[in-house]
Image (cartoon, rainbow, N blue to C red; front, side, top):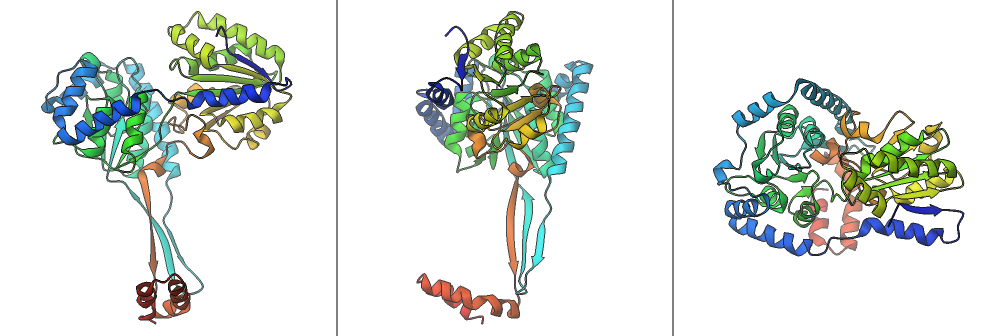
Length: 430
């Protein structure tokens, strides 16, 4: 394909073309599930030996279990190697992310109802969380902050991080971000073998209760397969952005925002929806101009040509309807008055309102989490938050009077279900 898909709601074939665009996000990578299942089984059976074997195979790094963990001296040296301006940026991002997530922390609930029964709900942190962070060419200190800080704010005592070190290479900024975020353990392993180690535990790596963080197709599939044994945040697909723009949007800003998502990887998706056909044409032309200047032009260009789309709509109300069907990970409202349009949006991972709130600000320093539902899962899922690291425990307390008020109904229901011990458990106290 030479360019992005071009659609218009005014054309008769639009619905079929739009459904094809939706289906674009649902393609599985063949052979991944079987390969991952084998890795998980071997790590579960053999522990450290299997982790070391797969690390040598995939990361070209020979490790003994004693070298899985990255020591304090190595972390300190990495922190010292980070340029001062980058360290300051990491600190600013960390402070803003922490402040936003602290504001999310819920209060316990305690109430006494009309029957005199005391009821409540208590929040508590998970004991241990595992964080997966991509390594090698995709080294993201921002991902460390976004995954670890909510866990620490929630009160998780043990935060274990796995980051691959292909050919032994580690990004100092990733280690600096881990220390700033309060990560308690860091291991230089990646891939499905790291997910298996975190889920099942080995002699060297103790198991965790939940695994969060992005990775490639093998990491995503590994998280899918260990779910149930441990919790996970989500099964992340390729990144995506939808930009709704009107005539007040600057075409060069829109083009750059589309490419900012496309440069993630070849499978990322960037979509423009606009009622202004002239703007659409200008943006498409501008994308080509900007593309030629980017360091990751090959990746962004492949994404734009294979998965990009430009949709011309009748008005912004129609744009909102399409946005809700797309349920994008990121949604930019590059319009003169974003508030009324935002009110129509029901399904999106994160929304960026107005011309001066590019999605990229949310990737780093805005404060809300950048780990978001992809592949249209924003229809039923939400971005990472402190709630991913908390559990709810409900409680009930009743005295003799309170039980007398509601107990007989419980007895009747238990008898109707044929559960005699249930009924007796209540009636013996009445």
